[in-house]
Image (cartoon, rainbow, N blue to C red; front, side, top):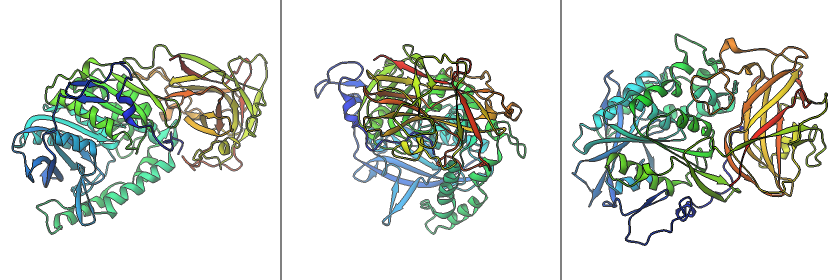
Length: 597
């Protein structure tokens, strides 16, 4: 799928613990210190063990959910002192069996072990319709009954003798955006959340630019079938014989198939069986309620994650106390565990224990600018997009660049076209795929526009935007755009990408802060088929980046009409033939947010 990919290896997080943003020297052992990536002397690890118990918790509608409670311990006995609790509404089994042993989420997560050692109770709940919990997901994810669960579980926690009344939430991906759903319910005792890689707009994840993410949906369908139907979670303590587990798993058979379900809702306003899924259950729909709750939010994001734009959108639309960290990580990468452990502890110490560690006196955003696959440098800011970013237009011009044997081998230049005519003709190649280590293979199947070798480093931080002027032999066509860096050897590295279906090109004013990037509403009434020989404008963003293009390398924008790694839907015979214009009147180009640092 054409999402940003994790590089072969990631720089060590220990690098960020030195000067980074403040330029201050590390303090000697024995002194207290609290800054991004470093936390000493404010909170002590008083425990080295933890014990797990599990049980069923009945919701108000009678559905029983499986709950793990992991408590700090000494000598194998759980501490009796009431403590703050942080919890996760999880859908991939709250606990797992390995070599005859049951491993809790704490056993599998070093950052959670840090919290337990510092006096936090961890609670993990199998979401309804998953794991050992009863119920089903017959109306898709993020439904109203799940929202009710989030409220009731939070308020149940504070009634327990091991709770001191302060509750937080943590979790990744699904468990990330469910925290926003929880905040929207405003449970009185939810004091702070820490969502990682959380979605803001589910429609744009599944139908990016209006194009159905066939491979993504297939992968989700296989994964959820594995966890919900095929694989059993450990039973809870009271169900030693597994009778209740078997009953619960039988109810999971009613879960919807994500592939069939998501493919049904073609447009954002598609309504099936009285459910407008992308509106009723979309995370961004309840941003207003999240703001009204006032619950503090610390978001954890990765430049190589497909949710990266979403987390900036959350940040831009929140008035709550908030923090955002973006590092060189992918959706499933755990190279950031050491840093996550520090920041998660600082966050919950401040909001759940009342420790004045200064975390809210720091800039609200920390981000890593990637200098190569393994090297990054950290910066901080209170504003996004960066106020010192200058949008520089790079226009499509005639070639050859001499850098690639593509359909056209065009040039990317800051000089505007002067000709009244000019276009490149391209017949869609359905074998194109961005799932390549060297994108040159994909580039050869598309239109390319490549810069001359850079005379200096060029730093791009923000949201690139592509503007295309096209015609097509068909009434619709999908447009894929890839921004790449070409090294001295001609190897092309995929940096970021964007997608837009031409019939979804209508630009609208969003009802929320969309960071100044183009917004397409994707309603059925907005669809505008292409007309023969009529030039249309397509304007769409690429996923945001913070990347240093090195001196001597080249920048390349590649255009294709298909990507097998994302979708195999909609293949036409014969395939469309597209003209991309690069004239004075129809000056196709890419705008890059360039920063001097």
